[in-house]
Amino acid sequence: MALLKPKIVVVPMGEVDFMLVNKLATNIGPVYRHSVDILKGMKTPPEAFNFVRNQHYAQVILSKLERMKANPNEKVIAVCEEDLYVPEEAYVMGWGDIVSGCAVVSLFHIRQQFYGLPEDDSKIYPRLFKEVIHHLAHLFNLTECRNPKCVNYFSRQMLDIDNKSDRFCDICRRRLTGVV
Ligand SMILES: [Zn+2]
Image (cartoon, rainbow, N blue to C red; front, side):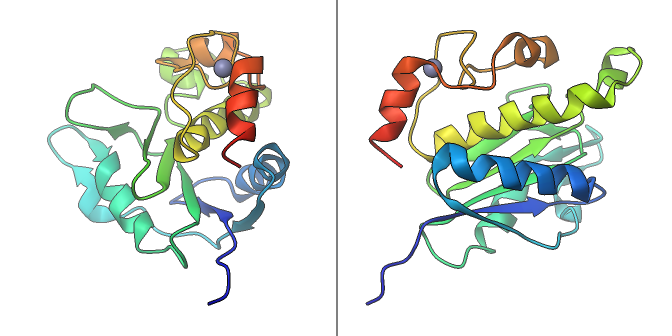
């Protein structure tokens, strides 16, 4: 049996800016030393939408992503604009599942508009990059880091993302070396 080569698959979902996702796909490969495929894009699954909350249920999106995997070693990450939630949280900026190897990150709470601030496009990409690196770290078996400057630190809100760097701390980097 041929070895199944591990890959990261990036999925632009819904009305997301393809150029932004393309830039992301180019930059995450070297961090994890994996090749990256970028898919043409998929519709946001309508069944994920919750009319009462006016948000999309992240877990439903993950189950859709799991079906797109070409082999079990792939890590699939979608980028969307939708406001995401899980039942125990008011919102989530991203959500992932280590068992399925899938995650979704949303730009909704990464945009300054959400906080009533003027939009600043130059800040969107760095935030997206950090969030995606953070969620991929989980898919590669890393637990969250307690160092607020580490890219693998859990960010509850946009300012947490701005306050952390786009790199792993020394501990996370050593842990990651063992798994990728
Ligand atoms: Zn760390």
